[in-house]
Length: 86
Image (cartoon, rainbow, N blue to C red; front, side):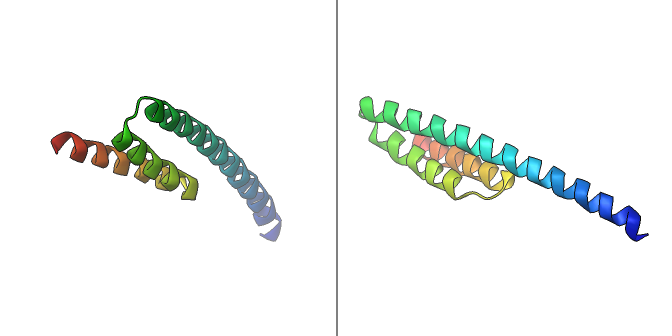
């Protein structure tokens, strides 16, 4: 029984490391995109947009999981809708 569990845990750990690497790459890409969007909004003097994007960027930087990143995006959409609705 032990001989079957060891390969399972090795494979499980390798998959977990691969998922972490993918998450970090996605996170880095999002951070880069949000920095570009913030710079663009600053150039256009869109203060509300800069504040909104900065909050999302901070959230993404602090995220630890894919779900955290998704929640950051959901919160951004809610803030956008509240700005639109006044």
